[in-house]
Length: 172
Image 1 (cartoon, rainbow, N blue to C red):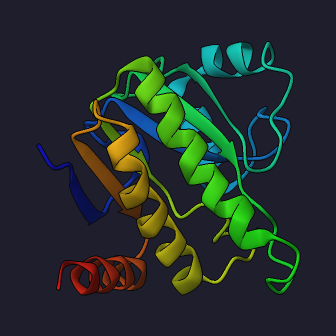
Image 2: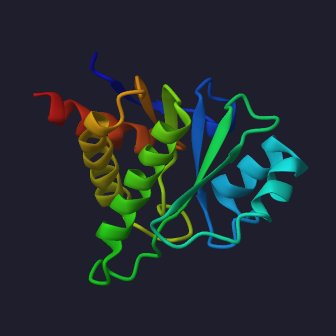
């Protein structure tokens, strides 16, 4: 069976998926943007568990329970800060998606939702980030047979259109 890849405009904390990805900072102790929203929606137990993980390196991923979220798991990954693209940012961003997929497969989740990792305060250009996200997730699906659905959760209509265009290009 081929996994379904879709783009959807939504609040990632409300999605009915097995796992959501948190665009976290290296401390894993909460922050702004999607990270703060996930921590608020999950409740204080998430922060308590994150304190036991000793942070996370850029390009890596760690799993916690979802607590008060609809999702059973939260995959915390730390994306790169954009410095113009010549400091390995593309490789680090691809590693975030790859490691997140590996962790989702490890816990046996059938569905996952990704935010636009590094595209907020970390400044990664949305068009480049979307291509890396879609290409990496698509490549990882063969190594992750438990995953039936991957959602690229878009914050804005502009981001949704970008992801849909790239997904449509890849299908043709």
